[in-house]
Amino acid sequence: MTLTEALTQLESFGNETMRLHNVKYGAGENQFGVKMGDIRALAKKIKTDHSLALALWDTENIDARFLAILIIVPNKLSHEELNRLVKSERFVHVADWLYNYVIKNYPDNEPLRYEWMKSADVMCARAGWSLTSGCISRTPELIDIPGVLDRIESEMAGAAPEVQWTMNSTLANIGIRFSEYRERALAIGETLGIFRDYPVSKGCTSPFAPIWINEMVRRQG
Image (cartoon, rainbow, N blue to C red; front, side, top):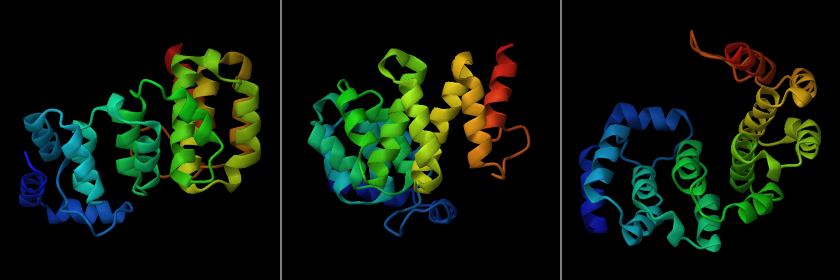
């Protein structure tokens, strides 16, 4: 499939309700408003096409970038290319897809985690904290947990909202998974108070770290 054909397909799926939904949550006007199911169906039709994925990304169209993420080949990306992708997107929904489908599966993401954890770029920092939260779950031996808690305690209140979200996820993961650090994680969450009043739907768990930690520990018995 060519770039023109892919964009034409995406445009034909455009949905005004979806477009307005995206705008509400921070997307720009360069989008068609395609439902996720239609994007996934088109990606399934294309399968993988690394060159097309990069061309789609460069359009800066939100729907094209969602599609690009699903058809890209992560291990064909250089560190420089992945850095470029991360820095060039500010809509957090796309950024989170990029993390879940590409960055998390990238074969050599540990050097990037170290780099991004020190980055002044908001989206790089967000991705770095996402990788750190993932390491807490999968490879905690790579993490200096007391050092990470120190950073969260001193930096999270002044961090950009996009970064606060993944820092908070890291804090909660530490408190849930490591009983020896739970008391400190709870205390940090209570002191900072970030997401204390975050609105949640009925039946969902609050992202406020103390509530999140205590609820997940309770479920684990």
